[in-house]
Image: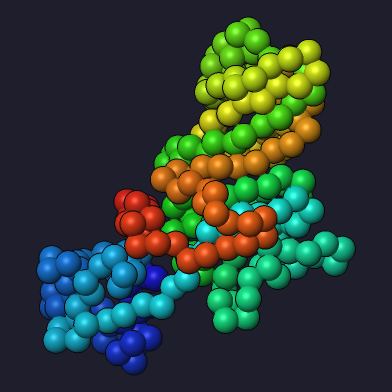
Length: 238
């Protein structure tokens, strides 16, 4: 949560009064004077003190195993949305999915009501790596791995950033691989493989930055992030 908003909310201050706390150097994060009023904080990760008061946040961070057929959206007239899979006890008015997965794509999805964190994770300059488990309807080869490494070019001349392709199994009719990318163009993974003359038949995201898909989560299931997982996201709290 933005530090200035937290102070106004918890201490019931006016905007002017909130600014005075900073001017008097009465705001401390983890014992250090903090002058950045827009800093993103969470009391699970930070000790937040304003004068003699300790402040606390109440954000939610959900790790979901998104199933195929569900859309990454807040509302949809035709399909079930990922937020509809969340039980009422875990719902927040501002809960939203960080990034998107296509309707037929499965796997790791982070949902949170901490908008600043989601924004930081999606910034291109942060180069947050995403890894997908991919099945395609043809044989992949070393030439494909090198093409991904060099940067796939789409029809029209658009070039993707270099990507890491690890081929796990390959036959004439099917290949199974892992693909790691640092960007998120529209239908990017599918289009990358189409450029190599194979079609994605199944796609599952298994990693996003420091977070990994929980193998114990059933499709459509979710759980709160553990403290160690949340700690791994601390560098993205800016």
